[in-house]
Length: 377
Length: 209
Ligand SMILES: [Zn+2]
Image (cartoon, rainbow over all chains, first blue to last red; front, side, top):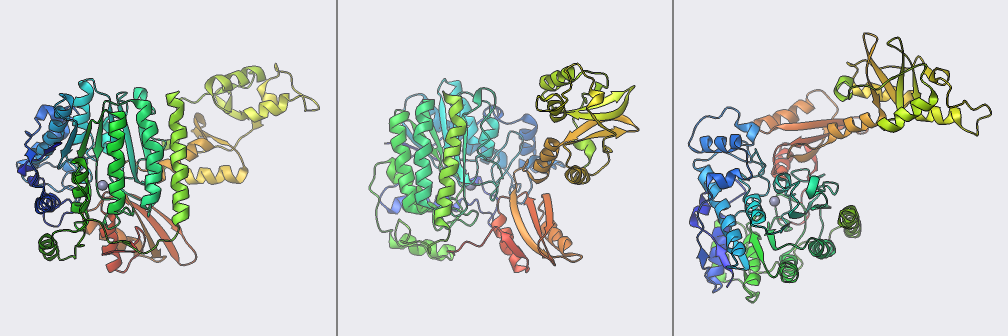
């Protein structure tokens, strides 16, 4: 059985009731898996230590997180991305963030020590956190900490980010690292936060050609997404030859996500997750770690991640959702949840410009392959 | 943004008695295409790689020999820029005169040179992204107070506007493109629409909610 990393203390990473990065997402997911007959057996991590955090973050930043965490005044907090509308201060934020890092690090250790091949970390994926700044709901970069650890243990790491936003924090921290391949598919930064993730951002020094960014057009749908995904992933993984694959499985590319403009359905996510597991079998001897990430449509996110859980565990994809769960959460959220695990089909009306969008994405994928190829041969 | 913000020092210049051959070698070595020319410390002209090629071309009826002096082929009394000129004014000058560079003088002393490439760098910097931000595009009436209404909307929400660019769109409207320090520009757009702003980006999703 693949390990699932989780601790109730993850739920303390919460910016307040109105904030989109809601702990409800995990609560709904765990409950859903339970009523589907798969109560989740979790492995509890330890919170990451201060020294773990300092492997990727500057101390001047960490000091400020710690100070704000215990209610001290920090006059220059906004220079560090803290105390902004996106990243409001909350008591205990340092420890709460270290719990999430600890979970991802624990997942990395299990794989590195050959105790486990597939691990799901039910949290983390805080890919926007910068070396010395919080950003986009992310305080500490659990992904970068885990990657640094894996690389130090001698494993070459392939990092795949399917969150709808560019993984700018992970990229910044590992931009010149020659042992780390990063691949981010995201809605183009011309339109979406954080604004980066262009094809020409290819890495520096030894990392040159190992940082892959595929910006996608707003309103990209599943068919086009999967086309470019299959174009890039096998080529990059085969060339790089990683020892482990780390996946940030953000669910905010779903068509109902309130923060972004891609149009994936749960069926598309199922295909993407299946491909990832196949690629792991082919290119990393099955070693793969998944974290969660963004995903702000409470109607969709628990279902997307439930599909991920079922696939990782080789469990069947059920059709119907338990009516009690649907009713309870529809009432609690004041939003109607679908009665099925997958989205209604079709989930949204036909979109204009479908052909142009696919064409554009295809061309971008070709440009990316062309841009990286000269670093590989 | 001023000319002084985009010049890169130290400026490479040559004397007017330099030979065409040496001038060309300097351009090759330094990978540049424009050279200001000095006589006793004062700017007297500019020579470009194109000037050198044309002057020495076998196609020319009277080609100059490689040992000729640059003073014979340079453009005299070139148009110059002041370090405190706005970048856009220099761009306009270069565009109007169809020239590729402007030597920059401070009290008659040559302190730099700007080229078309420097202006492209400036454009990238002015419109680019160097902090994590979201794009917001709003159509405003071209009348006093509209931009202020937009920016005070942001400040009431404690949002920081990282960059703002406006340009006229037709007769009585301007388009404002902002980069704001928040991941959630969609709910911001919704709130702006409730306040009767015409938000062009991000759009309302066609399908949902
Ligand atoms: Zn995201």
